[in-house]
Length: 487
Image (tube, rainbow, N blue to C red; front, top):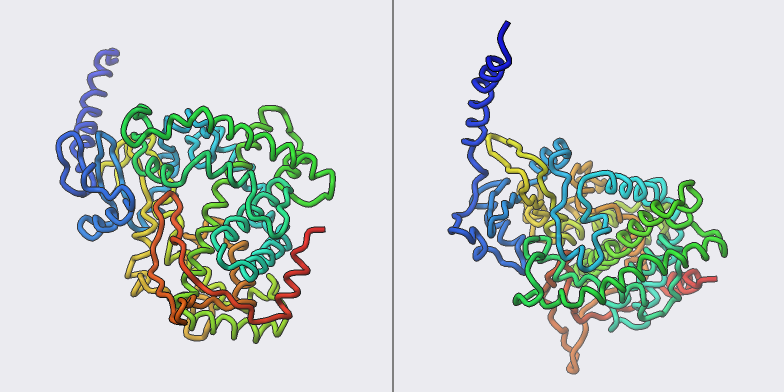
């Protein structure tokens, strides 16, 4: 019989060529790398998705880049994203470690959790609270908050951005905590704190280049890290105070909320309660940004395309008469759903999604993807894929409908929705049924031109623009005013 040493030699003879062959595999194609800095000077740090989309035209659907030693894989097509992130999720479900999350006290955030048990618990709690079945419980809430939004933008159109933020913030706060913001309120302490704790511009920069989170606070561009102790205090307040308020609310009126479901669900140990607090505030902070951004893009699109508004109103009137639309009308309003899909495609709220990190080496289409690579899904490039969306830069809801006016069975339709389509649909149909969005006039009665411009950040949104908002259906307006009042 062969000795142990012989078995080891046989194993080496078989294994070493495999290792050598693996190491000789090429990396995915990408731009030329400079010594040490790699592509650091090639990337537009304010709009990195535009740089990556240009690289797609040169190098294809999967691109390799390196910045200061960090391997970066950019995915520019939905097919590659599904092959890697869905079918090989065990290798691609990790998240980059951000030192600043530890310093700012936000490491609990579901979006930043590494692959493991804690993430599994968060996902389970999220599904219980915001899955398809759970979402149906909030249908009345979606419309009540949408009615508040319509009432607010009619009464004070110059505060449009504030109204959108309050709609998304109050909706999510009520769904999560049972916490009500009174109609007409211009600000909310919880919303303000979420902004103060994690500025969206810095979040986007760190998501694109997580190694920047390791820079000392004295380094140029990292001075806001000096605010970390203050932010940790605010974050702790955000975790604890609304959760305790949610406990009180569940005994007051019995309205469904994430906190109430948790407390009625069984395990309410201190450790599990801490998980629940993290899930709750993660959903709150993330939902505010994405929902408000999408609605802001919707209003901009309607301002730029009055023909779309007219067609939408015609469809609503034909189905609903003078009554307000509800979710029962949704199957009969395909054009409204097409508008919703097109808004999410036209201006993806998260142009680079949330970054992933590879937990081990992988091979895809003959290319080596190294362990520890930052993996970015370029949602912007996918939304501009001309093979899927001809004339992709144009806002055109019709692209989502058949010649007969039916919604297409589009496998990509849900890709940009991120699970908050119901609240968006309720707000959009309520606005389209009740108001008209037109260009504002200057002092001489001329239209004020609107040039679409967007902010930078993890979630982008239009920069403020001038517009006029006019009620076009007094019956629906009065119904919304009455129905939006909190008892």
